[in-house]
Length: 417
Image 1 (cartoon, rainbow, N blue to C red):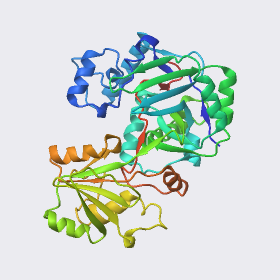
Image 2: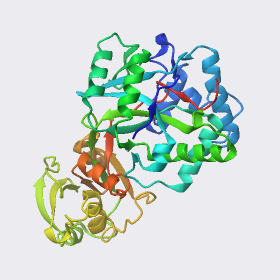
Image 3: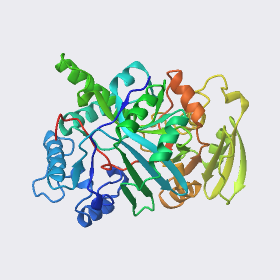
Image 4: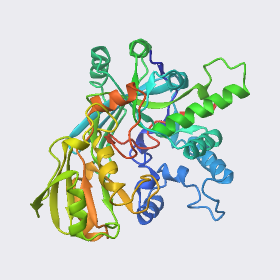
């Protein structure tokens, strides 16, 4: 059963709620990052990138940089840019983006649930990245961006959310990317008890986004337990920050691929090889989007194509092999284009489906990519089945919305701030 606890969140003071939270630092171009840091003294990016206004520079990832991040975080608290709630709370968060509304509960998940399988995973993690994030947490001692979880729809939790969100939100603002954010603080002890109790009846929660953050938090907790054999289980390192959405609230988009070249093949020879395992239908200049599972779109030299996987390559009895991302890799990317390592091959790039098929055309027409492939999005039932059977998807198979901002509500791993 799931253990999801309230916590004393560290969050922006009300009049700066629209200024502090930031997108992930990798989402900014160099110019965008410099502009945001220069124009906004309160952005959480100043914590993540503390060298901006400091003549003494530090190496990214170094202990010196991580200690500087922690010190800047404490500086934001000392200057009352960030404040900490005086009692453990849950936080209800709502986001409206491009007409889609998502509402979830922010709380802390137990590392024991990660170890015992209550938390279900569907993606492999990279050991080197796990260790890097663990080291980051060990020195900085805070979670600024929650792991995205889903859970089966629950009428009782839905009713609690409905009642709580009738009140005026603590935060209500729109960021310059036209995303509307709202946050309610749940401090009533009766409601807190109801939420905790109801989550304790849920058998499984699924990681939708944040596998490396989950793994690194669990590793850190295990390490600190080993260093403190008399731990009680209530110490902050036994938990990590999450946001929990009912599974119907999440939206899974396609995660598409663009490739730099045809591996030395002519367009004619490439299409001929693809035709061995796919029915290839030219669609002309009008954008074509996959209409069902095992159907792909391809954009090549100004033309769109529909690719239908032939029955001989579809493994309906094997859930992982039957994923469209697996079929594309097994029958086009690897054997024809010689792309075997999706994580590290520099000839491939991934484009989130939220940007639409038009972005695939843009990447090929304007950014020196040769061919693009659009995939049909994975369904939640596929994700759950793969997680429940202890299997994992290929890299970059799903793009899950909503995406959270860093610094909206922070969980501290310190005993006190």
